[in-house]
Length: 289
Length: 248
Ligand SMILES: Nc1ncnc2c1ncn2[C@@H]1O[C@H](COP(=O)(O)OP(=O)(O)O)[C@@H](O)[C@H]1O
Ligand SMILES: [Mg+2]
Image (cartoon, rainbow over all chains, first blue to last red; front, side):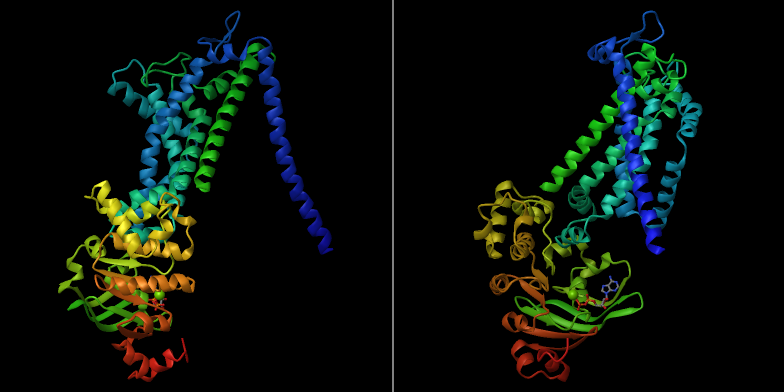
């Protein structure tokens, strides 16, 4: 009886595992199928480097360079803001803070992670963008900068918590070795602990950035959605993700526009694949050394 | 000349008394060996001398420790640790090259030219009896060295800072006899310049290199005397029993 139960449970788990792999493969196939259909009509190079995105004009102009630039700009800004602050925060929590401050900070960061991105986007829309509008004296506060700041808030919890784990994982012996040589606490952090934790910190950064690239709702609400190649952080931009989310509902199934949105999905997939791959390569190179 | 003057030193970890009123003088240019079964407070004693115990939040210390007549609490922890180096039981190279490991302390304290750093590293590696084995592979990762070599590298790293006192905490516990012999030889040479406190779980090692030997038991110092005397005619029966291997 017992044996049969074990057997059934085992097979069920196997089934779940196999099913999840199959789903992923099916999704990828669907994406490939729909996305690649576009390239019967326009060349991939033209698609990626085209400067105009007018999907409903006649004939539609489907160039996603502005969208790629928008995504890159917003992501870059978010990275510039969130990486230093996130890593510094992790160092503070792991190495410096007395335990009661540590508890408060960790609770705060968990809370930040738990806020749905729509809510963050909404808060940003009503507080952050008016602020940016008045500080920089702009016609609109819905800019790449607003998006970057908002996304930095979203990347931060991931970066802080994973970087913190990486810092805790540094063997205590490294620290003691440095202290025993007369290093100050700061020297120990800077010259021993951070370098030793760097693979983990890099992974934290990659995962944080990964979250930022895939983020949709908040950026759609706050970046202004102008499909134009931006020449600075203070202009409205539109990202790849926001484009899919905003236009999928109105695109006619089977039209070029429809296929183009899938092709954008494919591009996003490739971008995140490359990010993961580089992170992986980097981590392994560190390991081998 | 007295280097370290320790009077009535007690250390508690929470409610647990790890050291119960230890009074010891460490003379300059001697090797003071400390023996005793595990958990008798030997490591705790060493870590008080360079204020490493302060890194443990639970540790509470009382009594006085003076280095050259100055209470160690009157010296900054960093300056003290520069003067009082420590070598741990397990070799702890940092994830760096051999050269960078040896140069680590000097570079951190700064103020030396590249050339001076190179000279100091070479001198330290020679003093630690490892120069010949690594001189052609200074750029390789320190983790590629054997355990015994790593430990000698750690000794070199400590020597390079040019401390006055070196605390060894069971430095040979995981090493083969040949590495152990090399380290003991290094210690005997070094004592002309440095003061050495050697905690060892190997009674014979204390007999080989110690000028004086102290016997610790459960947080008390049972006895301290010339090494010959401890090993031939200890005044406390427990010392004799421990040396004979009756417990521990
Ligand atoms: N950080 C600490 N917290 C609590 N107890 C400790 C700590 N360090 C050492 N002890 C206790 O103090 C006693 C003496 O330890 P130690 O000095 O390491 O002994 P030894 O080096 O002679 O083996 C042990 O019982 C140990 O459990
Ligand atoms: Mg010990």
